[in-house]
Structure formats: structure tokens, C-alpha cells
Amino acid sequence: SKFTLGGVKNFAVRDGFEYGLGAFIGLYSFPSSLDSFYGKNPVTFGLFFRIRPSRM
Image (cartoon, rainbow, N blue to C red; front, side, top):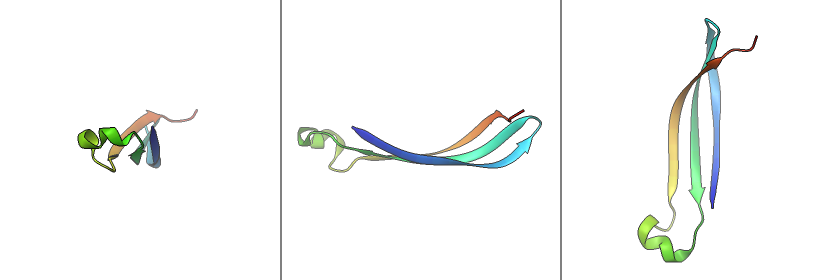
């Protein structure tokens, strides 16, 4: 199983688009038999840039 938490902060609206920066973190839970492959506490994280059409 994986639990992911994240968010985005819009910082500009220009030419009909919204621009934002975001981040997320993911935590995993799985059988201990897989520890040798993934470690005891695997974590993922990421940063991203988002562009989307602004509201009309």
C-alpha cells in the first residue's frame, strides 16, 4: 500500500493559464519479506511545475 500527500501553490495567472509549484511525499507499507528489495522504510518525493488553463 502507498499513502501520498502533496499540494500545489499557484503563483501566477497569465495569458489564460495558471502556473503553480507543487510537491508530494509517498510512504509505503508492504510485507517484511520485501525489505531486502525496498529497505525498511521506502519513501518517494517529488517537486513539479504545473500549467493549466485558468478559470473562465
